Figure (tube, rainbow, N blue to C red):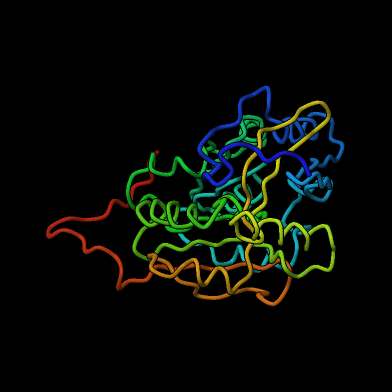
Length: 278
């Protein structure tokens, strides 16, 4: 097994990706410029290597999305924050439907592709930087492409959900695409779950980096959870599961809404801002 990276248990999304290490951004720029489908390579910290996505996935039009994504996007409402927007396919779809969308990604290359493709408000920003938005800026937070993983760890879930609670309206929701790591018979993955448990991590807490051609990105944590683990992680937070979509399958979506009984009351005479801001 490869030696473990330092500071293994920290929330790993605290940084932006430097241009020289932006492997995923370079992959998207390569496809945009060449019009040839591409895919990134994922390297896990136990030495396992695989493609990270289906070739061309980040540029697919709505008609080519999975049935799961087409069902889930229908729950978007109001002002939308698209986290981990990639090449902007979900943001562009919602823009065309008349939604006001803010799109963020920690990859400068991804944001450049978004701008080239017509995404109106795309920012280089990581999930840990959500506190840069003003309170009640959004009604929906979108985390497609299995981007629930950006929470990184159990601690990250609690830390980032607090920020999401602050920047969303009282009727705010999170639409999160998730992968259940335990629905597999692959010994490579089963052994990795056991390794994680021995070192005090969640079974589906992946430590990985992205590679494309000669570019190698930084190591970061990515969290895969079962529906049962998700329910447990939400205990004592401002959020609860309203519904699962395909919750018994490997890839599923959770629609989270606020626990109104846990929300802090608005100060007398105060109003939550309805203006989108950055």
